[in-house]
Each structure stands twice: as structure tokens, then as C-alpha cells.
Length: 74
Image (tube, rainbow, N blue to C red; front, top):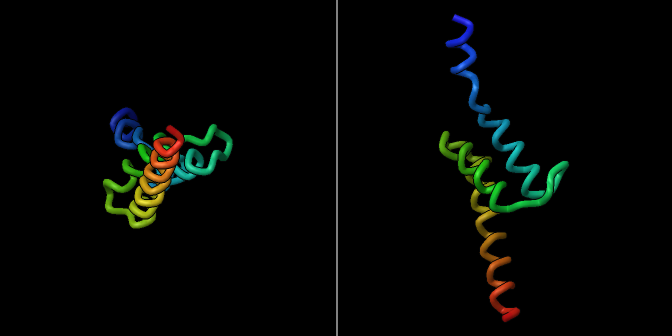
């Protein structure tokens, strides 16, 4: 019984996924990495969490802006 309960809770909760996404988005205790932040926000957004969906939109916009900036340097 314990093993089944443990397996059911092996995936991070939505709030944990959002927290990890936030850490990577803002570089809190980890290197700032928008692609990794997006990954975690997308996992949480799969549950239709509005905070996670806002994180996805925000990070996608940042990634788009940073790639446009790099393109203008060429």
C-alpha cells in the first residue's frame, strides 16, 4: 500500500511546479533560465492553473523579446 501511495505522489504538485518555474524565471537560488522556467510552468499549466498559464505567457514573451534582441545584433 505504501508503494502505491508513494508512486501517486511522485510528481510535483502544481504549486511546486510553479515555484520551480518562478525560481528559474527570476534566477532565485538557480541560474536564470527562461527555457527551464517555461518547462515547469507548462507542466503546471496542464492542470489549467491560471497562475501557471500567466507564467507561460510571461516567459514566452521574454524568450521572444530576447531572441529578437539577439537577431538585431547580427
